[in-house]
Picture 1: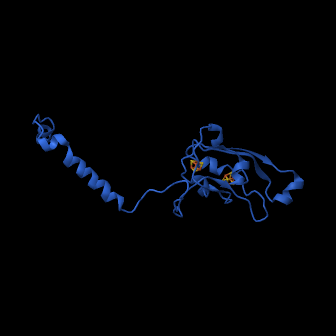
Picture 2: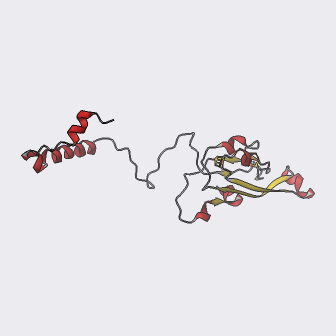
Picture 3: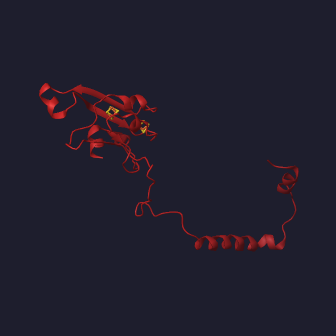
Length: 161
Ligand code: SF4
Ligand code: SF4
């Protein structure tokens, strides 16, 4: 908050001194700050050549998992979609044929599974809600893109991740 004294100082019409007019002290002060920062440890990194080491809690892009036999873990129960506060997950479930059930163990599967990354806020609730350990946020950071369609992640893309 501006006090009365501060306001007076800002509105002061006092003529500049000779030293103030040549701006030399200000330039020297500025250079001193620049030189001081030249020798300090740099906190910026040259991304994408240099990659930052993420914390173990880091939440990156989603991936859908398979079990040790290569079968999709997801059974399209819908709990992740229910837990998602951004309504970013949609799916269509389907039932396997009788002949396939033995092979896949579970009767239901996600015929389609989509995450709209433009809506996702990376809260991780889908991962926590999943009873089958089928979805994890263990991928990279989302890459920028100018095409909105590239942010719609299909089941195939999520399984690839
Ligand atoms: S991380 Fe959060 S916002 Fe993103 S899909 Fe999962 S539940 Fe939804
Ligand atoms: S990812 Fe998990 S919670 Fe979501 S539908 Fe599949 S099994 Fe259910």
